Amino acid sequence: MIQSEIAIKYIELLKSSLLNELYVENEARILHTFISRLNGGVVNFNDYFNIVQSQPALLTSLRDAKLAGNTITLLQKMADGTSRAAHELRNLIELSHTMIGRKRLDNLQQCMETVLTENVPGDFIETGIWRGGACIFMRGILVAHGVTDRTIWAADSFEGVPPPTWPEDEGFNISRDVLPVLAVPLEDVQQLFQRYGLLDDKVQFLKGWFKDSLPVAPIEQLAILRLDGDLYESTMTALLPLYDKVAHGGFVIVDDYGSCPPCKRAIDDFRMERGITDTLHVIDQQSVYWRKR
Image (cartoon, rainbow, N blue to C red):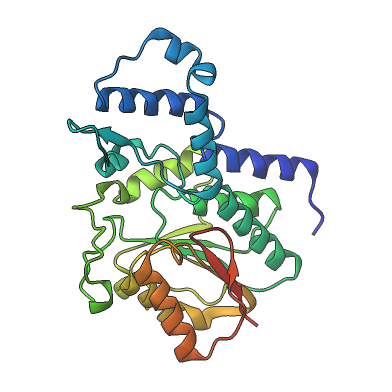
């Protein structure tokens, strides 16, 4: 596949926009404000106007987090001089349109362009889309390369991660009661697609818990299956109806393999039960993928 210079630049700009790399200084200003207020500090004009000079360590941490798809944990100083992680602020400071980081976006681009170059048949799906950033990116890649005969399937409950009900998920509760930031309404996601100019009939939304929506989804074949369900249940109920639809030469990408133990267990169990020996490649500390051979 021959890539034009315009397509390359568009894809890179789309990537930077989804990660909020273009306005990282403003994100640093917001984070600095939270940190200061959390610990009783005062924010002055110079902190805002010269954030690059006044908070270089914060900017470095932000850029590193956007590269690896990590979350910056804010520390709150306690009366006894110790500090504790203020995890609840995650619900206020997730500002980017995707959490997956540049390394995982690079991997997604590489996988997509490989299947397009090699004419591996099928559509593309992400199961667990949050604000829709990765799906927006996939649609943008297809537009950049003039591909008109493939669909992006965006599957999500749009109500957050389900409460743990399977024994394999016991003690791992990241439902909307704990992390409401993960519950993004369908209308908000569609509006974000619209803001990027990428909402059209080549994007199909599958709303509902995976156990209900995916077995009946009108998907014939997949070139890429990207799993981002966090739980054992959400991972397994996506694999069971969709894995056999992944074409030979297609890719399975697992977002939470290194960060969510139940997800890792589901992948390991599924691969063992199905006798899958395709090499598991590491993308970053959290994510892996394999190519179906």
